[in-house]
Length: 183
Image (cartoon, rainbow, N blue to C red; front, side, top):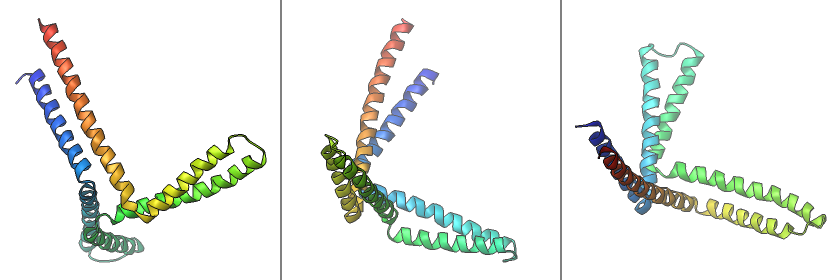
């Protein structure tokens, strides 16, 4: 197989993988996030077991460092079991933090906007409108943290599909140019 043919084949395989991944993310966002949770849980579980094996190979706990390794390994294993039971938990926690950050930030900005109003800035109400929207978005994210995750996952899926289409179109153009150069 020539380098050119191998490059075309690799490009096609990559496009197919990205297309399938994009479709899965677009159609099944929660299931895709769950798979991510399972991967995180697996990494935590393997890390925790690895630390336990290290402690056992060292013939037990001899130093304070070994106690810390033991605590970390038990915590990692416990957290991984919890994530295996509820794989979207970690996504929910992250989004709740994002919601809290949005609420706190909007409240801090509200204080500044009220200063703008006092100084008779003409467009203070535009800023106030955006701050209210950000505050409402933060409240909504805290109320339903998976909603944001679904939207973002679907956007990622659509982006992968569009990227695949662009890649295939560009690949087709490059193929035509290469054929013209060979002739």
